[in-house]
Each structure stands twice: as C-alpha cells, then as structure tokens.
Image 1 (spheres, rainbow, N blue to C red):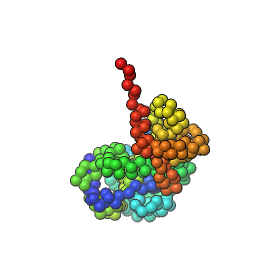
Image 2: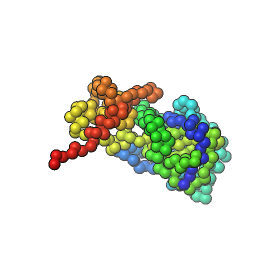
Image 3: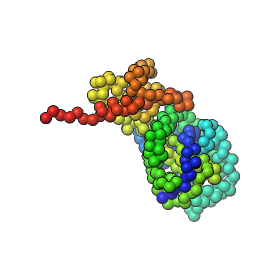
Image 4: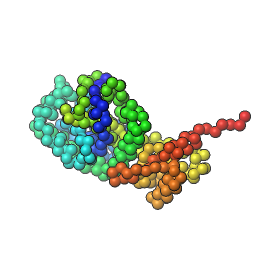
Length: 330
C-alpha cells in the first residue's frame, strides 16, 4: 500500500477544491478507457467517444501514453496538476501549468510509466506538454464544458455532504469511501491507495481533495508544496441507479412528490438538480421545498452560486422511521 505522512497542521488546513482541469483529466481517462460506471456515463461516452477516437487518431502520441499509464495504474503529471487551496482556479490558468512544464521534467515523470516499453521513445517527443494541454483543452471544450454547469452542481453537493460528514465523524469517517483503498491509518498516516508505491512525507504542504464526476480517481503533487487527491463524486446524481426508493408510508404522510424530494435530499442538491431527478416543474419543486423547510425537515446552505438543500436531523429521523417495516399484529 502507499501512504502519506501528514501533520496535524496540514490536515487541519486541507480543503475541498473544485478543479475544471481535474474534471477534464477524469473525462479524458474515461474516454480512453471506454467503459462506463453507470447509464448516464454510458450515454455521454456514446455521444463523445467517436469524436475522441478521431482526435486520437490524428494526434496519437499523448493518447497512447495515457493508455499506457492507465494500464499501469498511474496517471502521469503530463495530464494532471495539484490545484491550489485558495479559491476556484480558472481552467486556462490550470492548463498553463501543464503546457508550461519543461520537456525534460515530463520525460522524467513518464519514465516511471512507460520506461522499458515500446512507448518509451515517445517521452522525448519535443513539445509533449503542449500536445497534452491541447488534448485536455479539446476534451474540456468538446466534452465537459457543455455539461459543466450541471457537473459543478454535483461537485458542490458532494463537497457539502462530505463536509457535513467530516464535522460529524472527523477524517476517519470522511475518507474511506472517497477512493478505493483510501483510509486513515492513524499516527499521521493517510493511506491513499492499495498500490505498492513510495510513501511520502507531506507535512507542511498544502493538501486538497478534489471531487470529479466521472467515476475515477488518482493523486497528484507539485513537490514539495502541494498534494491533491482526486476522487469520484458519490450519490444519486453521479449514478442514477443509486436512487433510493420512496417508502409508501412516507408518500402517504407527505404526498408522493414531497416524499420523493425528502428522500433525494439525503445528499445536498440544488433546485435545478431536483427538477431533473423528479421530473417536476421548477415552481412545484420550489413550493415543496418551502413546505418541507417550514416543517423543519430541510436545511439549506449556499455553495458558490448554488443554494443546496439537504435533510435536517428531523428529516433524517422521519425517513429512517418510515423505512422500518411495520410490526405485524400477533
């Protein structure tokens, strides 16, 4: 397994960050793999993968390196970067960090991925970072930007949900389902994956956690200043198959429409997300949210430009009680 040694100050100063570049990198990895984690991702792949394959055929170097990296469970610095913890970065600024890397730095990083393989000569291709940034810009413009408003809402909802979990149970409760193999080991050790890699001392550096909507994850760093964990969003919006069933008794109590909204708000969501998930009109959703809030079943908070709603402790208790099967008379 691979783990990072983290000081209390580093962990206390860690942040959840929205990164457009991380979303583009995750989308690139999904396009290259060609496998979908859920039906929504399948529809997105069916729409955009043919164009990606055409682009890759015309610009084959970086896609081949990405494929080699995927096969070795390693994401090269050529296509990723650790974002800063202060504010939300602009995509163009993040991309400039990729295109501005010296060729020799990228070649040294790729030696860990493709060294000794038929692709090894590609690592010395002149202008490789620029080619990588052009590929990421294409992925962002053609396959991510048209969906970015909706994807950003999913990311914001994930951050709100994990922040709440962090407040309730600390990092030990917030980390385990972020990424496969990630968990808090104690004594300042953060296990980041199950691979046998070099452990790192990152005390004193910035540590950020970056959610992405495609179901993939990896780590990145800008040694010795900054380290990042990219992880897949969880919840009903990321995977439509995970929608919870609305208990009949809850529907009878609140009405089917309001009950469905209350069940969905086990994780924070915006009004527009609820419109998509329920098929109800915007005005109807807004009216139901007001009634549920007036009954102290919901709370809300602002996240960026969105207002996210989520169940209050009373709302959680009501849903939990209604999910318990009724006892039969003897």
